[in-house]
Amino acid sequence: MPATLIIGTQWGDEGKAKVIDYLSNDMDIVVRYQGGSNAGHTVKVDGNTYVFHLIPSGILYPDVICVLGAGMAIDPEAFFNELQSLELKNIQYKDRLRVADNAHILLPHHRLMDQKSEENLGDNKIGTTKRGIGLCYADKVARVGIRLADIYTDSFYTKRLPHLIENKNILLEKIYGIEPLKISEVSDYLKEYAEKFQKYVVNVSYYLNMELGSAKKVMLEGAQGTMLDLDYGTYPFVTSSNPTTGGAIIGSGINFQFIENVIGITKAYVTRVGEGPFPTEIMGADADHLRKLGNEFGATTGRPRRVGWFDVEIIRHSARVNGLHSIVLTKLDILDSFESIKVAVGYELRGKRISYFPSSDYDNIRVLYEEYPGWNEPIHECKNYGDLPKNAKKYITALEKFCGVPIKLISVGPSRESTLVKNKS
Ligand code: IMP
Image 1 (tube, rainbow, N blue to C red):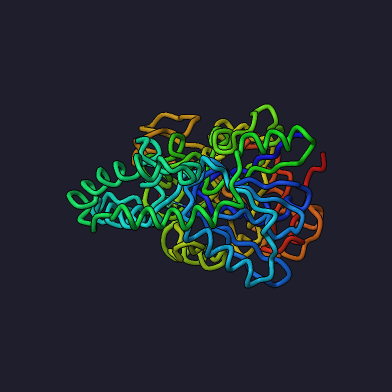
Image 2 (cartoon, rainbow, N blue to C red):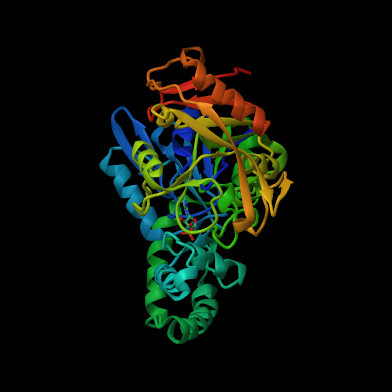
């Protein structure tokens, strides 16, 4: 059975959670493949609001199994807090949760280091969520990380852990000015969580490929977005994992040939949290208006998001990097009250037209815009694509033409019902 992959095409916060929720109904398994509790996925169902940071929102469907993949940086405290909030809302999850044994464990000192590291960078700070994500992945790449599988072996506690901590303490004390770690405390912490995690741990690649082989329907869910990808985003103002298609394959361990449907989630305008280039950014009153209408404040940190006009070059980049088959256009209703709407249709870099998203020199980009008339009426009650005002359809058709990817679903409100199907196939 083929797998479906859901990717954020911009700088995250495209409204993936709502789309994932909408599509989960039809799935047997939903897998989150990268990132950690830096992500904040908000879903509104039957008047209730759920915010997920680590656990796939598919958990809201009683028959869906949710998997935390190998590409994730899992903060045990955040994970068990999230389980507790599911319990408070009477959501049964116990037999429906799996965690990859080769996912990395994020420890409290990663969070402290993230905060210090941002302070030390001063004006060059990344604007991270301070959840320790980059520091956990740095350990992974330096091969001094700790995976779930490790904490179930005796030799890890007697041989590897003391050595890891001795080395980490040099860094913590000398560079970061953070209290050194005590081997016994880290050991106790990990043993406690080893027990708590035990019932969820699986060999993720084996598990998922077996399930796909036996005709189970699997959805892979990314956090953040393509422009925050460590390799294909606006480096260094990126997250430390790969939210793109490549990251989905690595982070889930599934045979890539199972992936038959890559869906790009794209907001009808653009937002970004944190520092870094943003060619179509809007400032001033228009920005405040858009931010307020779209409630563009971070679900994880509460920070106001930067906002801007739709940027076609970003989506073309995303389509190339991810192999998008289709787009779901989200939050179109937020543009209801705009007289006219700008679309960035291309860039000039140092006076020359380019047709790719450059890897640097963003100060010398000149954005080329086209302007589209607004529709000036509320669309959140539209039930079918045909119900949309003429100018809204014109805007959608223009985006589709410029991006070169079909737009198949359009979201006009936060609830599951406010989702319009454009092309059935
Ligand atoms: P980190 O992932 O916390 O290291 O932050 C790195 C960059 O990614 C910062 O600009 C964050 O604001 C951004 N970021 C991380 N997670 C999200 C997300 O879920 N949505 C939007 N931006 C995010």
